[in-house]
Length: 350
Image (cartoon, rainbow, N blue to C red):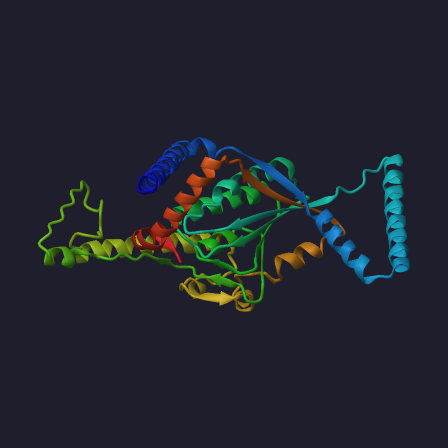
């Protein structure tokens, strides 16, 4: 009996080791192929008119009597036939019917690194291939900001839409602060919910310093650089007033670029009064010229359902099981690193 117990324990340990080894090998393989797999994906288009039509029809089926529902459907079919007759009549008379307006909807949910910029660029490319100046793009934006260079790239992706002469509207239901507002201000029109958080036109950087702790334990830290300002402030070395001054100058330079960018895209804004790093709720943001209209994204979409074809555009990555496991591990590591190292050592908005 004792032999069987020992054998069972040995077997359990062996299986555990094999499974752990397989997971580690799989993760390494997944991460090594990450660059290749990340480019694999496809654009998906959802007709939002059909989604809302189905939703409204279900509501009517439950609220109206059978007779009322049938009468409403008959009227709807009659209206559709009349519209079709008008279209055919125009074609027969040699008059082209007015083109159907389309609203392309893209979602952007921003994190510290603006990771969503990768699918965003594919969505923008797809829309630019199909859209014209008669159409419109709505970006439903949510972001509290992040790294300067990441949100600079995200803003440039939205700039591609305006440069193509296609009307761009940005909707903010919750927050577009700092780097998020940098993206939003590119749009021809910004709409926001009454209590959405807007603004934070400023730059901040934080960094701990462990020099005194190392010195207390007689630990030397050496850092060799070439170039006077290759490193200004450090985590482990002794920081100097000269280094601090240069670091602050860099922050000020970045802030000036940020203010110039907002002024370029929204010249009516009094940049001196809003570029203080403060945030405003939607109603206040309208008064400050940071937002054009108080409106949620749902209201903006539903009030156009009758006259506009509304298409939601997404880029969906294709991932196998090992990519998903590797991505989950990497995401967890990224979140921990973001909370500590990235937030403490990188220039970033907000």
